[in-house]
Image (cartoon, rainbow over all chains, first blue to last red; front, top):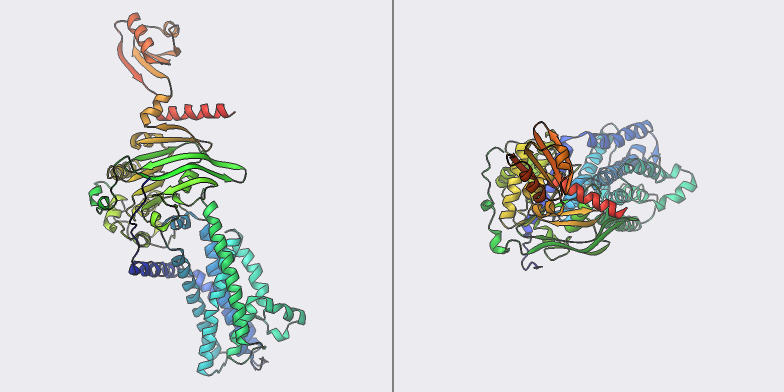
Length: 265
Length: 321
C-alpha cells in the first residue's frame, strides 16, 4: 500500500469559489421555484395584517400595536424562514442520494451549510422588509431611522440561532416527519413567546414559561430596539440565544456524524 | 455520444505526479472489514483490494453487501470492525476523496439546476478537475449542458451522475450500477470510457446486475454472498470454477444412446442436433467421434458468467442452510 506523499489541495481562491457557487445555486433553486419563498413571506405578512391592523388603535409595551407587532411578527416570520427553509430542507436532503454524493466528495461541509444559512438570512430580510413597508404605509408606524435600522438588523440576525435550531431538528427527526414536527414546535413556541399576542396579555403561567424558549429572547431583543421590551438586559437575551445556538449546533454536528455510519445503502 | 473523441491522453498528466505501475499499486483496500446494522451483518470480515489499472467488478445478489463494501471504501459507511483505506488513508480524509470519483444511485438531485451548473458545482470541489469539455464528451452530455436536470430522461440523468463522478479527474472511480436504464449505444461508450480509465492506470470499481457487462469489462471479479467473498478471479477463472459444458452436434447418435455415456448429465435432441450437458467435455467428445465418425458442427460451450454466478451463489446458499 503506497501512501500519498503530495495530495493536491484547494487554493484559497478555489475554496472561496466553492462557497460562492453553493450560495448562487441555492438562490437559483429558489428563484426557479419561488413558491416556497412566497408562502414563507406571505404567512407573517398575513398575520400582521389580520392581528396588527385590526387592533391598530391599541397600544402594547408603551408603543402602538402596529409598531409592537412589527417586532413580534418580524420575529415570527424570520424564525419560520430559518426553521423551514433550513431545517426541513436539510432533513429532506440528508436522506437523499444527492447529499451522499456531496458527502463522499471532498466538498467542505461548511460550504453547504453556509449557503443554506445565507439563503435563510436572505429570505428573512425579505420578510422583514415586507413588514416594514406594510407597517410604515398602512400601519402608520413612525420610527426614527436608527431604531428602524437596529430593529431590522436584530431580526435578520435572528435567523442565525433558528437556522441552528432548524439544523438540529433536521438531523434529529426523519425527512418525512420533519415538517409536521417543526410545525408542532414552531406554532406553540411562537404563541408562548408572545409573538402573536403581546406577552403582557398572556396568562402569568405562560409568561413564566416564555424565557425557556428561544423566540422569547429574540422578540425581547427586537422590542428593545424600539423601547418596548418587557425587561431584561439585551446582554441576557443575546447570551440566551447564543447558548441555544451552541446547544443546537452540538446536536446538529452529532447528527451529521451519525449519518456517516448509516445513510448509505 | 456517437463519436468518441475523448481519450485518456486528454487527462492531465497526473501519471507523472502519482506514478502507478499498472496492476501493482493498491489504491483502496478493506482488511477484515465488518459492517453490522443491528443484528444484521451486511459485510463479514471482508478483505478486498483495488489496484491501479484494474477494472474490478463486485458482483452478488441483492443484499450480498456490494453497496456496503463500496460505502466502506468511500468513507460513507463506517466499519464496525476492521479497516478501510483509500490511498493509504482514512476514506473520509479530504485528500483521499480529492482523488476518488463516485457514481451512486442518487435521488434528490436538484431538478431546477442545469447540467452545466451541477458539473460546475462538483468540479469546484477538486484541486485539479477534468476540463468541462472532457467531462461532457466522456459522459455523452453534448447538447444537454443547458437543460434542467428535472427535464432529462432517466438515462440522461445517469449520464450526468457519471459526469459528476469523473469531474475530479479521479485516480479511482467507484460506479454503482452505472448502466441501469441506458440504451445499448450509450452503455457501450460508457464501457469504453471505463476501459480507457483502467488502461490509463486508474482503478475502476464496478457493481452491476448485468453480468455480461462484468464479463466484457472486468479484469477481476469479486463475488459476494451474505457479506462474504465466495469467489474471486478473472471472468474466465470464475467461469472455470463451475464444472459442466454444453456439447451440441449434428449426428446420427440418439439421445438415449448418448445418455448411457459416462459423465453425461442430460441428453436431448432438437431436430437433427444432439445436445449434451456433461461434467467435462473430453470423454463425451471421444465417445461421440467413435459412435459417429461423420459427426458435424460440434460446439462446446462453457457456462456463461451468468450461469457460473448463479451456480456459485446457489452452492453458497446451500452450504449456509
